[in-house]
Amino acid sequence: MNLLKRTIPLIIAFVMGVLMAIQYYVPHKLSQNLLEVVSRWDRIIAGFAVFIGAYSLFHLHWTRIRRKVEGWGYSIFVFFGAAITIIFGLLNGGEFFWHNKQEGTMLDWIYYYVQVPAGATIFSILAFFIASAAYRTFRARTRESAVLLIAAIVVMMGRVPIGNYISHYIPAIADWIMAVPNLAAKRGILLGVSFGAIATSIKIIFGIERSYLGGGD
Image 1 (cartoon, rainbow, N blue to C red):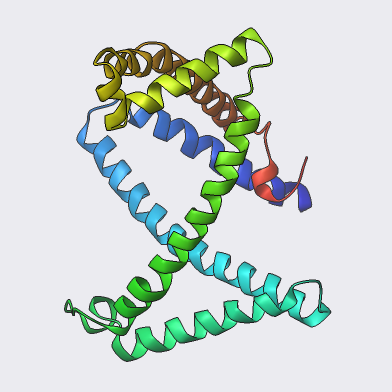
Image 2: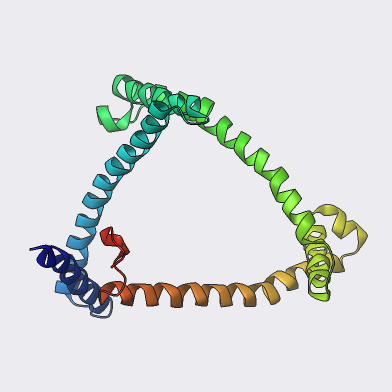
């Protein structure tokens, strides 16, 4: 029985993986209908995944509060913020609940006056960490790091008006760096990521990778 429970998901993953891989190369109406049906099921499953993610989030923070681990007081704001957002959404949520687009709803107020300022605060704090990491990275200890430092300075100078004031060659060199060496490295990274995704997909289809089932075997 346990073997059957482990085998059925593997068979489903194999069949659907092969079907969707073939579907991409078959421009037939049946193939397009299959894609539409699978896409509809994908949206339904994604909706359930949102609820599972919310349950996991609340369970994690409730455990932190119950055990009173370090920083558990911040977890209270997760429940507080979720409760306020749900209440505002039910009372005056706009399009989702009342089927007509409303401007200036309570959810709009939460987004523009809570979410946006909080996001801006987080990103402004991250700017200092980025500057610190850039300082440690761009120290010219080797020839490679010196080339990286010079290229970074040229690109940054070419993206601000002062670089054009110094010389009109600086923006042109910055554009060349972004269009040739940087693009070549970017394509190499994208190729590596693509090959990795293909290899992982093949391992999932043939049952070699089973971590998505909740186990390592």
